[in-house]
Amino acid sequence: MTLNLLYESSSGYALFEAHGLDEIGQNTEAVRSSVSDLNRFGRVVKLTAFHPFESALDALNQINAVSEGLMTDELRSFVELNLPKVKEGKKPKFSLGVAEPKLGSHICEATKIPCQSNEFVLELLRGVRQHFDRFIKDLKPGDLEKAQLGLAHSYSRAKVKFNVNRVDNMVIQAIFLLDTLDKDINSFAMRVREWYSWHFPELVKIVNDNYLYARVAKIIEDKSKLSEEHLPMLTEVLGDEDKAKEVVEAGKASMGQDLSPIDLINVQNFAQRVMDLSEYRKKLYDYLVAKMNDIAPNLAALIGEMVGARLISHAGSLTNLAKCPSSTLQILGAEKALFRALKTRGNTPKYGLIFHSSFIGRASAKNKGRIARYLANKCSIASRIDCFAERGTTAFGEKLREQVEERLDFYDKGVAPRKNVDVMKEVLETLQDKGEDKEPMEASAKKSKESKGQEGYAMDEDKPKADANSDVKSVKKKEKKKRKTEEEQEEKANETNEKSKKKTKSKREEDKMVAASDGDGKKKKSKKKKKSKMEDDE
Image (tube, rainbow, N blue to C red; front, side, top):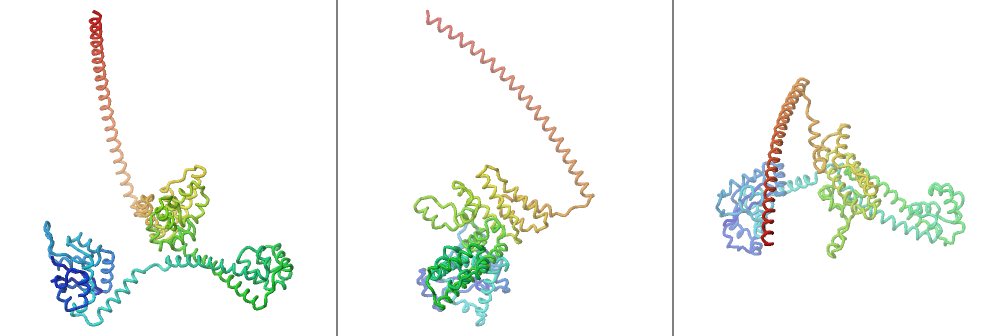
């Protein structure tokens, strides 16, 4: 059986034929060692056909199709022209070696050409890639490298092509930075407390907040200089005049030790850094809220910006989150507990990152798992709407949030919630009244199973209206059809009534005949019993 090799280069498709494989052996190690030798490899593998790409755009489209495991029309015609036809009912005497198994299965399904992809074929293709410029004579030195570089740039650019306003990577980086900032600010604030407590230990019990403690320490500086002149500034920071007076009185009777001016300067600088970090953390949170409203408005409206951003970062992207089923989304973030439960055959976790939502905290202990499952279902719907809708709206997320609220009321008070189909109808009607585009509505209708019927509804409204005369004619035709159908239904009903009457009469007559026959049989049996008794007595 002859082996043909399909190689997808940056300049075009190439087809090679492998001769005399016994010279280098079928062993992959022997092939690996012989690939580097061009004289030996050139005797075995020979070029049979080459189809160059027409342009850089054509090359990009072809390579995109190959990477997805699809066979284009050009590739199909190239393969069918240069390989013998496969006859039905007969085993082919050749096979095609490809690098991508998905592409090979697609070629085999479409053209019935047997394809194979294994280590032996991959080693041969590696040799083809290494000596490809030697097989094609017309190539100038440097042409192949330029084609590879240009195709690599365009391929990467096409893969990374996105809408600048909907970059979910920014959300992932922002939520990671927020978590690290929270840890750093907490540890730095504790360091400020410990450091300044040597000088003013009573301040820790009066001011509990870390950010306010750093601000108060920055204002006070040296406790020996603390007086009533500091009261306005302290009341402005603390927001309470009584606390400010308590700080001043505690400073006069403080048991802390004195610090040198250099030590106080270092404490003040460090307190200023903590304040700057806290203010930057607030700005970063506002930025994250704004980005979440741009990228995933429905998910943010349903579950909140922080929890939604954590779900996106844990899944890797918004598209990955949209691909996740609701059961996976429910335990996202609790993978360790899940696998531990599977190993020990214990109870699996009911929730992961969703637990930080306020809905699960409000639910009772027995209903936490139920509301987590329901919330995960709604989150998957919201993420799919956000991912595949071209223009984002918060209407779907707000309605989904109302549904979760109704489900909480149902578990607590027994109030029946609305159906998802009815809720989606309300959202679509409100969006149509506002005059917004139907594209996000159609995408959401495709992604949510419950709202499948809404797409046809939206399409019917988009149809242009006919003239008044045509409307009148259509109305008359509809009335005639209705009359005909009503008359036919009345005739059918009369026929069925007559048939049912006939059947009931025939059944009654049969019942009478059966009853009469049963009576005669009973009389005969009674006579026979009397005769047998008389004979026994005698």
